[in-house]
Length: 457
Image (tube, one colour):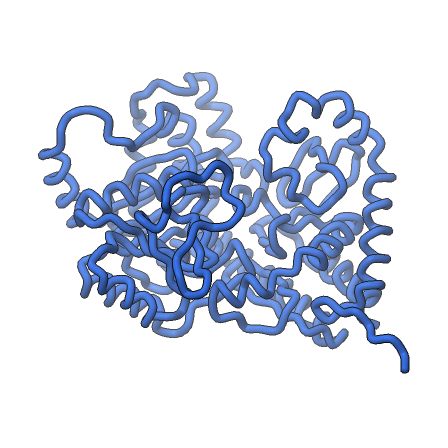
């Protein structure tokens, strides 16, 4: 009898190994300037990179970017690359949108930080309310900070200790959210560096799309807030079941917990984010990454009633440090960029272009997968598209974890990059910006087809 073929995600491992090794050699051999620059300068950094997750890119060494414009990067060796990563949402509207670049130049002549507001801050506040709804806003530098501060407010107002998050969630690097379900129990995520606090004292974990598990957690009386993305995104993407978000709102109200919606990734869903498109009703709203057109900025807002509750609490606490805020947050450059981006870049017209392009990409990738009989699927929310190397749709974080196949994904990412297409490194996420061209989308589909032909045919 012939030997059984060793398969992974429906792919012959021998074919996968051949592809991966060839594409790795191709990338490394075609970038002599990058190789020389890294050899000369990377040694100053821990692990050779300025941020540790830069080592998680699947290519054999980091690509050094020379410049970027619209939805295209050029690396140090002169290769032009269609950018579907877009800074993992940070540059979702394209690199350096003209209104934002103009605002940066203008503000740079006036100073970079004062620890005081500007007139643009007042205008940005009005634009935030117009775009996202009636909230009382605060500015942070990252969504991690925004989520962390929102949780302090939730605990202060409710007097309860824990946050409820979902298995497989993404909320930046907030310590409290670094939990997962293991054998039905909340535990700290494996792999955390230097973790000493027992995270089960401050967090509980439930499965996405499972309202019964949410209610069981809320019934303990310990939950100050439910913190959730509208769609699980930083794993293999999981869409909410019909009625799931309505159920979260009802349960939060019933058990006197707050509902925090983190739109850091799902801002791609449409104008006003997933909250605006689908009419969600959070007590606290958080968004970061692209809200200021790529300038590091996040915002968090409290519904007026909650803001009043917090004001009453704040009047009773002892004077001194609140544990919220960083000195460089709410700087004038952020407000200049917020104003420019909200008024001139984050528009209904831009989202319409993004939706149209994302549908083209989704349909093309789906067609390729079906043509090759791959046991994979594609999912889309607004301008965000992801191919997943497993059957679907996925229902929760546990299924998403099982669908993540790093060995296959790494080979695909490097092969796509060698064909001029960059996608997000940690999973298979692709974004379509308002300046992404149809020909760029079609090139990605053709490259994907070429790779799957080698793996499956």
